[in-house]
Image (cartoon, rainbow, N blue to C red):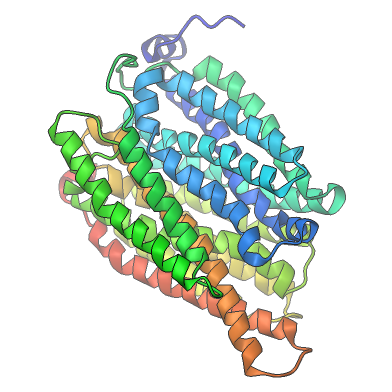
Length: 488
């Protein structure tokens, strides 16, 4: 197939006003592949842990390593888009994602599985900030909520369908098979990307191949801080508190070092990894705080819920996936509605309402016991996904609408970075908190036949912890109230 139209202007001339929707659909498919790679493997963790004889802390690094790579890679997206253009950056990341999926599927060693997850995470980190940049560039302010809602409705199909299909694959073909689910979507993404993704931004601006180099020092500091933070959290349990203290101290030092270097680079006229002028916008600064706390709850629960269903409620992987399917389908409808509401309703109320429903779902899920009705579990999961549906489009738009267009690319990557950093920390915190509470209940009773009861009690406390996190995010979300200029 010969591609003649490379620029956004050419594609707009060819397809008219439909071009922006074709472009949005194209990047949606690639983003679905990246989200599937991040969520589908959760249903395979128990089977993989049994295969490699892993403990909880080592097993969770399959998820945490992906999220570390994703988190750090998000900071590089603005530079990649500026240096190599939208099409090359997007297609390169999609091909890397497919390579990681195929490599993980053929891996027979745990370390190779970790490498494959890191490769997938790097690709997903580059891909995921791109849709928000496109929406804010290509759509008028009064259409951004609808575009974000429709995009989100498509995106939630990935975590809705992924665990269901993944659970069946784990039961029928083993845990390695879930890696290959990204391959068909990646192939479709490449075809669509060649056809509809321009080399330049939808709002104009060509790639600057001779511009500033990547802020390697800032990237090194951010990577060191992120890795030390997550390793320090993992080392908190057991007898590793000395190692944890050292790692967390390094992470703490990296924060002011990163901020200081970004300020210095900006003052020298360079291109920092994270433009700190973004945080002069009160809605953006508040949105980033909410995104970090919300990431802890969202990704922590995404990791925790399938494990709870299998290890706490004794359901098979296929039942877990099927149970989560109705909630995902409901989320798709709610997120489209919330996107339209975000064009007319103050977004902080949508975010606070969604966080309240999510917190309630965590509390209700935590009180379930083995033998509880499966329909209760489905209902509580649906309730939480309704809450998510109101949060997802509202939080992004409420945070970024007030930014100048020259800062949108940086804003999207920084916002996504902080949300994923919270998510990566949330996965580690959930694993650590769960082990701590299970051990606590085990020490309360000398009986040796209540292992399941101890485990269920540990899960209950962990869900309650996530509910408290949602409440904290709701308090921060009150600061999302924007001046009139931020609303259409």
